[in-house]
Length: 236
Image (tube, rainbow, N blue to C red; front, side, top):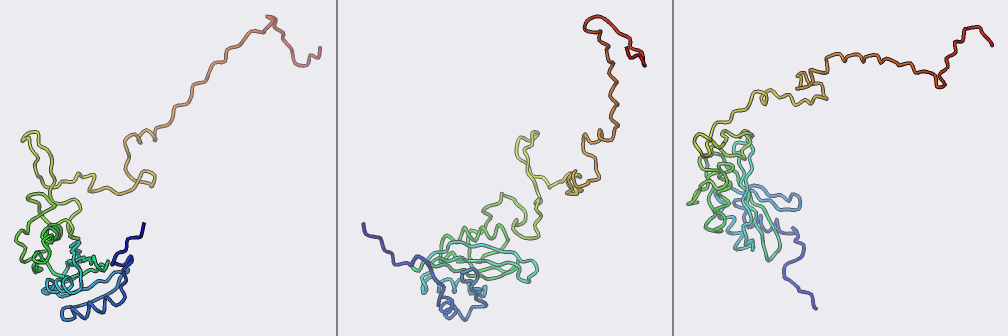
C-alpha cells in the first residue's frame, strides 16, 4: 500500500514567516517576537479586526482556535487579549495580541469567525474585557448574578459569595463569604514544627505517667517437698 502524501509539511518552520507577516501588518504592528518556537505579534487594539482579516485572507490562517486573556495589574492597560490562529494548509500557528484596560472595548471579530462569539464571552466573563460589536456579550461560565471576574489578579481566592442549600427555604441560597476565625488565624505550622496551640488530646502528654505497681512474688515449695536450711560458713 502506497504512503498517503499531504501538501502540508509534517513540521512547520518559522523561517521567513515573521518577516512576511511583519511586512504585511507593519502599519499596526507594535512588537514581534519568536518565543518558544512560536511567533507572537502585538498589534494596536483598534486594528485587531483588520490585522486578523489580513492574516486569514492573505496568509492562509483559516482557523481561530482560541481567544484567551491575561491580567497584568501593574500596567496601565492591564489586560491582554490573545488570539491563536492556525493555518491548515501551512500546518503553522501564530499568536496575535492586543492590550486594553477595564473601560476601553476591544473590537469584536464575530464578523470574521462566528465561533469568536463564545470565546469573547469567556474573556468577558473571566476578565471583564468588553468587546464592541458582540451582540450577545454576557457571562458564559459563571452563574447568574455572579459578582466580579474570577481571573483578575485582585479577585479574592474565596470569592465574594458562597452558596448552600437552605432547609428553611428549600432551595439554594447565596450568602456573603464568612470565614471561621480559626481559618483567619491559621499559622500554617504542623504540630511537628513547634506550633503554640494545643491540639485535642495533646493535654494528656503533660500528665505524669503513673508508676507501675510492684508485683508480689509467690514463694514456690521445693520440688521434692524437703526444705534445707544452709547456714553461712557451713561447709558440710
